[in-house]
Image (spheres, rainbow, N blue to C red):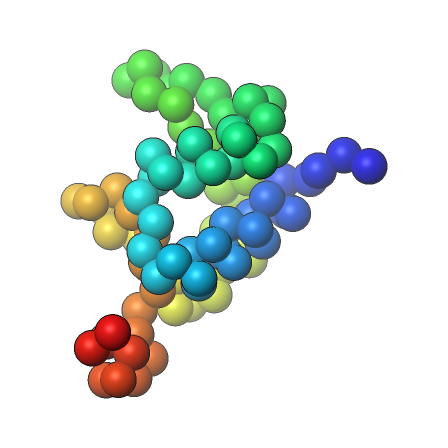
Length: 87
């Protein structure tokens, strides 16, 4: 059985939920290690990036709590309570 973009997108969400913050470069490395280089490409700037189909599925399926920090180039989970923010 081959892996789908939707399955990788769900896995990404699970990782972000667990880690609370994941840099894009770390996610690229993790996807390549777990699912293979077919899910990674080199973008116009010469940097490894996540396959566009995976990112489309990720945007469709991710929860509202998962946010993108453009400056840090990382996904993070927004704390839903003050106690979580203190962790």
